[in-house]
Length: 306
Length: 305
Image 1 (cartoon, rainbow over the protein chains, first blue to last red):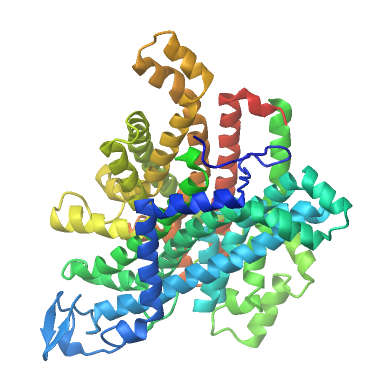
Image 2: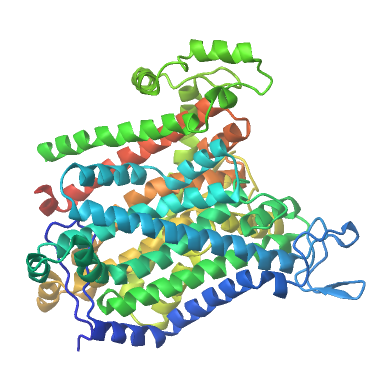
């Protein structure tokens, strides 16, 4: 039995873009499929835990992220120092590794969330314009997207941050600019597919405004692909942020980010290898959580792809 | 095929122009370029001289036109550190990066595609689930972290392979495996879903109905059709792998464009950074074109617009 009424429209679309129409009743089924998918639930739980850690870091972190004490430097996991226990040990400046990982979640979650939200906002606007308004604005916007896709983005991000100087703001801006293209393409495709449909034509004929048409008839069509894209892009942005931080182009010390912690830990690879493990595991878990949820969402919206 | 090729080459022009514009603006957006292009100890007179010598006092559109003109003559400026041609020094480093990228792609194809096929054949089995969870986990690991872990295990603990440098075949193994782990999961997942898609099609059903052995159906009939999207993804990812090579190189001190660019960034050697970005972007764009042509050769239906 096909549980989801999917309608893949090809007319006037770029080959990679398929529009999946989801009716409200079927959206309910998609939701049920999602919450009964163990790996999607696991992904959501991991992500939830990371967001919670980021939000409550000042409360749940055992110590401040920059509390240094050289007398207790480079201790292994569960080390005790003056009656205090250090669950993941201490780093080269005697700072509590667990606390730094908990605070580091703030950078990843912030960059991922703001990057995806700003990218989605720009992308949706550009996609709506490029799809609805015919003629040169559409062509210019889409060529712009092509140029951006022509770059290996990591290289571009490295070059831009190197010129502008590393800071949290620059990081968020550069990473946010990455995502708009993907969103814009999907939205545009869906606008192009929806525009000639009869119910849109008749709504227009009966005097509906452009804004109403877009909000009422076009946007609901792209909820599914946008949700999936958002989770996948969230994962990509966290990996990018970690990479840039690893190269010293991200958040500046002493505030911890997982990439930077790994970069610092490299110097102690031969003696204190555990320092190279914890931040990497944190990155992996967060990204895995987003990827699991993204896969689950895609399966839930369109079971044929699994 | 020829009109298609012509159209594609024509489409290349605005893209490449856009790339040069971005690279050109990179240094300009930060304000006074002499701040970036001259050492911090330069006097105001030095800066003024530099500006008039390099035409930086002229309107931006004219500067850009000159920049493109220089590009067409192969002049990408000179390194601020040792005054060598920026293009030459980048091209000198390119083979090492391409070697690393190709080795990584080779490993990724060698492992990823068979894993994808087996996963598709045994769909739903424990093996399939493990392979796909493994692929998703691999996709979730930061490339540089994989590199660090591999060094930790194979160079520090087991002492089987060298930690860094480029000094013979043994040196390429760890960096190539590291970089391949970025592509492998993607290839495995893509091959699997593509195989499953192909099996729903009539020609496969016909092949089965003819009584062909399952092995022949899989390898002879389905694989070719299934590999078309895989080749596309591989081509699209070539650029990603090139960019990933930057990070991998820095972990393993591999003497390619990546370590070079990072070094140039720390030394504020912007002409070299610009040249490297331009060269890598061009290689990336040309690869994508090549992949598209390959795609058309594999699947003639695409030729018609």
